Image 1 (tube, rainbow, N blue to C red):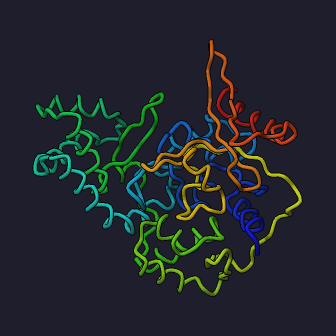
Image 2 (image 1 turned 45 degrees about the horizontal axis):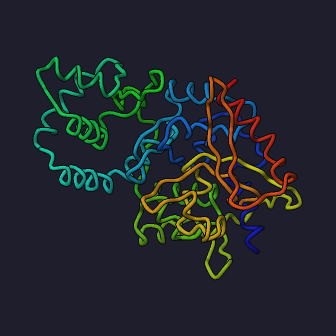
Length: 352
């Protein structure tokens, strides 16, 4: 297998080519989790994998609790399906707690104060309330609890890591918080071994071909845990050496045709880009810093046949939105024209 074939299979497994999944929550479930820092743009990560959907469809999935946005696996925002959130939380939370406590220590926060406020926060949210961060601060103020912005944010984070609250419905463009067990009643409990197997199976099915180092990066698990997980799924997967690295993928993989051009406009932090530790297959070293910074920021990307060849952005001038493409190198018009239909899809998703 060469690099072109590897990328073609990844595009297929990541649902960026033809598939029959129709619901936003099923896209997220197939992917396992989907990174979602910039919420507005992250919705397109789901939308680009669906036909004839717009941003309102993703909002509906979030507002009905079918998709949850929270911190899971790694200490960053992710979309996760309601069906999967409890067993993933059980698996990843013991590793995330020390990280959040380290953040608080660096901030110089009063941890004892935070833990005194968390039960009050829980009472404030009881009865199905969905409150923004500002509304939570106002509600605590009514209880004579005054927190600066840093302690308020950390209190919310601590309540999240304790499994007390989670993101709820959207209020305009603002995220709310609500009680975890009220919004997403527990549906499935897995042992750690079962969770490891399930996560590995989900990752290498949806993200393969991928290396064990990719899995370590994406999952936040230790190398030992990842090796254990791969052993559990070994009978259904194969390992192939490509570019002097070992890649895992399902042994019944369907290889899509390679005689077409696949033009895509992906959002920042899309799984096709962010979920691999080594990204040498998708971007040349000379262009890496143009879309991925050293401090972990990712730009929207222009993808042709699995390779990043530029970046794009949404521009609104005089109330008229448009998509602007910026290629790394001089690009023939015939190649630029390949993205016309993607621009229309993107505009339809956000603006229609």
